[in-house]
Length: 503
Image (cartoon, rainbow, N blue to C red):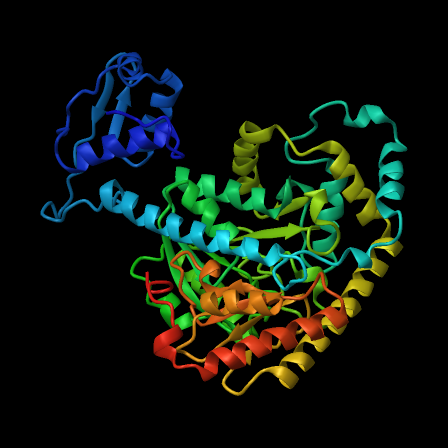
């Protein structure tokens, strides 16, 4: 075994998988004694703890057995009345040259597309690219006021690292948000994170350790797929329709048992739409039936203006089968970097162990500011009500401008709130080429291939209007529509960009 220390895959996982492959390929025979832990550690230039961690996983899977004073042995197959039935071992994760080549191609293409986004920063370009809220919605001097309130209890509160789970009063305040929805959540079911991005990374690391199958709806926020790719986790994609995942394709999964399924049910990023009640119930039923877990991204919930917003998956299938992502980045201040995970107590314990090794805990002062914000019931609720109205106004302006300026053949989603929607061009069109044409007209957006790990959705794009004023939105869409009209009127064969989106 030669573990690669430059790899993002933890060393113990590399060693565990090498041993598993040798066992399943019958290179290591049943009953064969493995070298001592110290010898394996020396041979692989790792710590003894790394070897023990790898062996422990194999012991739990029944592939090896350990006997005090005797050593560790390859397990013998258990005899049953159907000895001819082969033991089913979980397949090894895709690896080797095909994995390396595939990921390099994907990474190269994504980097190229991302580099194009620098054009959106050209002077005079109206950029529908920023996925953050409008700072104009903030009360003047609110950060100063909240910081002073956080420090009013004494600076010594922030001198220590604090609880890696997060400040207890903050976890209580977050739990209260869910109790107001009729969901009995305790502080022990809450883990405070440095934004929802760290929350995703923690779940991804746990999935890597447990060899969990990962399914992701697409298009989606690519920070999710980036996090799971960093741990070399194969990603199965499931196309999302306007009202939620394609349930028939979800049921068609070969082996969904124990899988982790990511979805964004409330004001979906990038579509902006909600999951329908029927699809929400069907998704929850799928998770319960297959022992799967839903990774539900609900960071836009506070922006939803309606009383009929989708229920949290904490209701059904419940915290044992759901991991909920929350954050103040969209509803308050992105730079505060305060997010959270809500799930079962047992899962929180595991994620806390991973988080403690990652950063010991989130900055206490940032948590104190978030706590001061949530505890100020009048301030928090008035802010929430204000931003809902604000983004509805921006949404209405956007929809009106699209209806007025866009040519026939172009369609778009109609979100109930939030600050983004999904535009679809005629099938022969490329949003990548349109992006470059549009920048020349003075408007920019996020091409569809950047919303999918396989760089699909070539003829679609995300339009994010949350950080723009109404006049900017109208003028920006006028410029964009001019580029669309000119592009559509040209012969597709002479303008279409090939190779992007056909991965």
